[in-house]
Image 1 (cartoon, helix red, strand yellow):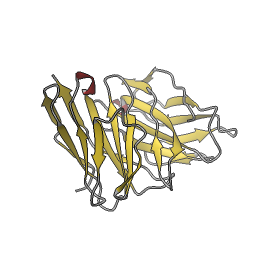
Image 2 (cartoon, helix red, strand yellow; image 1 turned 135 degrees about the vertical axis):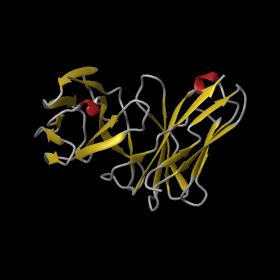
Image 3 (cartoon, helix red, strand yellow; image 1 turned 30 degrees about the horizontal axis):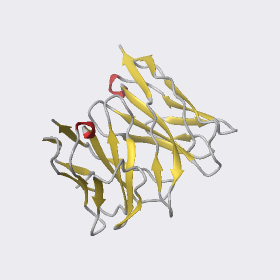
Image 4 (cartoon, chains in turn green, orange; image 1 turned 180 degrees about the vertical axis):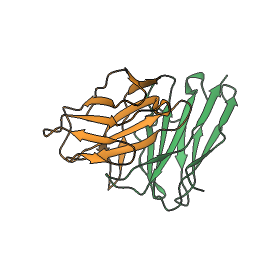
Length: 114
Length: 113
């Protein structure tokens, strides 16, 4: 596709359930980022992949959050035992990598934990 | 991490230039200044970036002061579709060659008729 694709666009889940959020980056982009955005706030960095490996996961809030990118393309953000505070828009971005290249963002997945 | 300071909101009349300021007084020599904007319910959109020199593209111009402690994003002829939250970001190096974007709360630009 032409841009970063995220699915689903909306997800409503019950407290305590497990959810997976998917990101399809732009073809050829080696770097992939996950961000979380709460209402009225700027996006908050969660994790960054270079290829298949998580090069920096310092933004993951706790061990309920985990992300994978097994083949260096599609990535999945996994949240266990969801809590109401996890409700937010989860954004994915991709880039060619490097300090001077722009990152392209998807439209995000709006997660609501009820 | 170098922090940025932006005014929380600004207004601009349609057709006029919008000048959005940003302070980044603790920026390091190898850190780039990026600008993104986010229109309601969409993902952030890249606008422009620079290191030391002023930059211009089809969307905007970026003016960086000589000491690099501040910058200004200029939208030369603002339209209603430019109404958005504008983020000034100093790009922090990560491991290897990549880097993350650290967003603040941005400036909410309202373009009016």
